[in-house]
Image 1 (cartoon, rainbow, N blue to C red):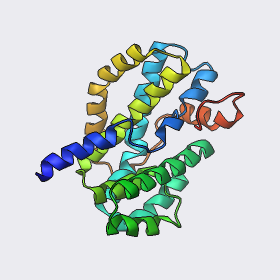
Image 2 (tube, rainbow, N blue to C red):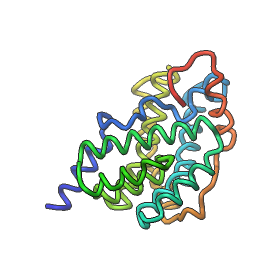
Image 3 (cartoon, rainbow, N blue to C red):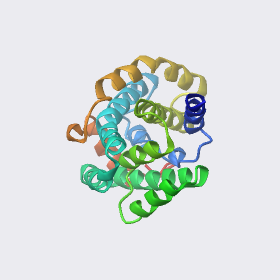
Image 4 (cartoon, rainbow, N blue to C red):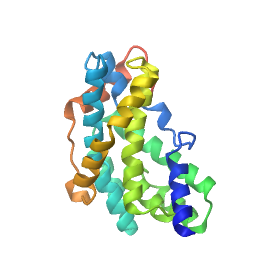
Length: 222
């Protein structure tokens, strides 16, 4: 019964109706599009693959460490803050982290989540280490938590691509289906990484995202 509940829990977390605030973000795609770096489906493919690898090296190490050693959360949150030099990405990480905390606390109220909320209150609440801390409390296995993180990142970028008009809904879903091998590859490569392996693998996209606040018009917060 526990395994069945865990599987249903996973479906709930990855459902687009689960309110984490990610819908308001594009992971830098909007800025890349307006700067002419992502103009069509082929360039979107490359951006998605790059964003997925960046999630593997820039998010999973912190998620893994916080899941395995929750007592280190404050240290890992500070490391995330130092790592995210890009102001836009740093702000987005804080917003999404607090949205995730609020949602999990309301959906699965418990003493453990109340304690976590108190711990997080005086931190930056960056989404990567906070995801590890919260998923460790809520119940998905570490591998499941990693898969949720990677899948959600791909879906976020593709949903933004549709709203920006870069591709249509059918093309986005076709690309989502093609991402299976990429997801497996990144999960295999980054699933065991510790916070010592934290790395920036997409520096140009990071620079473009940093210019998001200077865009003339914006649909997304990042």
